[in-house]
Image (tube, rainbow, N blue to C red):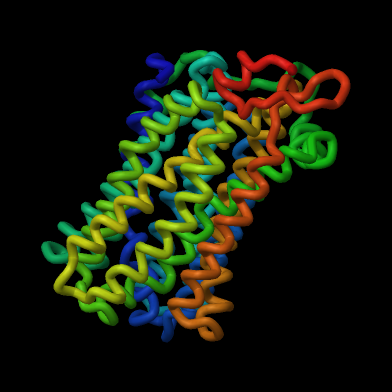
Length: 422
């Protein structure tokens, strides 16, 4: 971890706890308070995902011009304002169109804040420790969304109710914003990163052009979409399935969700450090893509087959999925390193993929669930991870290719840097 950025890591953790408070119960809560059905609530979350996708792209492009610090301030302000309006004007009046608009606009907030800090990390951390530095970022990110956020909700809802719990999220987000940005003020990497004379329009253009100047960066973006699309998708349909259909109830479902991502926190650090040794690409392909394909199936089918009396089995399956998700952590080190002369553009495109997952997952769940059912939707998401497995093997660092066009048998990280051409 770049220790000078410790306040930023802690601020991201606190911010994402606030952002994650709602994730385990908001879709069914909206369905019962104005949306009407789970599918219509899924459309609200899909609109939110579109904003997250655009905000994620903008976080990388604007951080080059404004500096990560200013982008993070903007993200904190957007989240706070539109969350308050969402609670007062949309949920407060059970107005479905306002739910779509206000919750959607709030979606720009967390990617500007969190992924703006990720740009800060890539600017400040030395490459030999970049995998570990990114691992610490995802430790903080998933520590809040949804791990500690779900635990906060599981404690807050019985004590104060859903609405008060949603208001408490605003306090957490504001506190996280202040901790990160006041605590890390003046630290290297937080100001403008682009050379003098580069305009915002040019930075945005560069963040798009990297897709055809470095096609493998675009492939990395697609892998990043697949990384968390099933995770976001399952949060549309699994809360009611696990709570009511399987019979765990809201409390045990929220605790299960916290366990899944609590496991993910620890393995984010493990795979971040391990990938610097065995190779970024190897870690992503086998621990991430292949591992998620298997464990995502276990997450649903094990409790569906065994029923509510075997909660421990659901916990084990959830822990395995949480661990496998962490296998994708090195993607945030690998993709920017594939375009060393345009890291800002590569990070922007990668962030677009991260935000795109918040759109693609709920969209697929909302559109396909009525056709496939829960089991079919689960298998479709598992198949998507196998697509990521194939795509990952096309991702190569510049030094992995010999001058004559031959490919070095390496996969990024320390393994990639020490490989030799046969």
